[in-house]
Length: 114
Length: 117
Image (tube, rainbow over all chains, first blue to last red):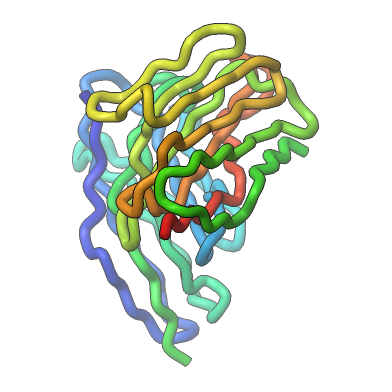
């Protein structure tokens, strides 16, 4: 069974500050890992995904995440927060590249303070 | 590319009636579609996986007779909430996936907000 744990259901940062959203995974096979963003009353938009090609993954909107097998982590970062980054962020894991079942974390709501 | 259209975006219905939600892949063929339910301030819970032309696979605890899923074509899957009750009120999201090697997976619709009165 696979699972992800997102530490911190709410994170607040000041505009221009570093964004760090934490995700730890559990998987019995090499995982595929994803970060999604959700704006109110909308579906999910893919920010980035790890598929074993490179441990540091760059995504859209200036976000990136680093896969650390030793720590079973896939934390999401952005050097400088923007007001438009305020949203819900979900970490997810799959053993099939996302073509079959994907398990989502509980989500982290990011608040950006002006 | 890879646009998924979900309709309606919101619906209000009376208790006891049925509601149909459509999920369409507009520019690719989706051999697999997933239906999720999201409770307020919670994550997405996978309800079922539907493969074109075959019966949906429901997750444990999801009532297949209450949540009817049909995936009759490579571009359309429908979720029908039968005899809806207030506890069925939720945000339902679909995602569509092309065959392996024919594009990236998991393209999400914008969701449907269902309110049962």
